[in-house]
Image 1 (cartoon, one colour):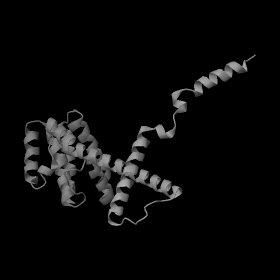
Image 2: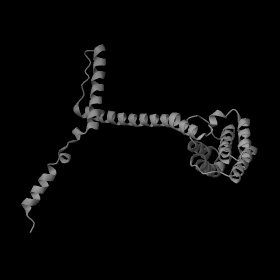
Image 3: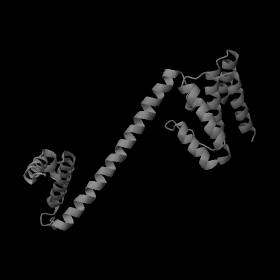
Image 4: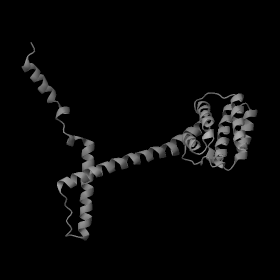
Length: 213
């Protein structure tokens, strides 16, 4: 038979642990937010009372709690947006350029006004049997042509995924081949797989058809 006293003692031991005794107010993140909101509110009250000493800045408890919850939500939302922009800034300004430079990949922004130079690069690399490098410049040529047709807008911060989204939105008929070309580009120019002459010719023909339409 189970001893009720033993069960009660074990239950008391479990409930006496720190994690069960901790109250929500002991949460360090919540405390930090509360302190920030309280300090901000005190600063606002002092600012208003400096110019209008007779102004009553007190609120009833219920309204104050609602205001605190709203401010907490806004503070968290601002923090998420801020972190998102910081991460995007680091990726687009530091990580991607460093990665492209390390792999010797061309940046479409550097050739947007020099399409003839891109063609020369393609021919030169094909003649040297540097098919992977040639493929990278074919991809650049395609992006330049899509930009010329205003299907996409080439900008330094944008990634290939964003360009694909713009193609989806503005010229759906090119979506499937661009998705395939992007996958081939990633495998060869980022993934280390070597392209061959057939692959380069296939996508160069796609570029020429795009140019003629």
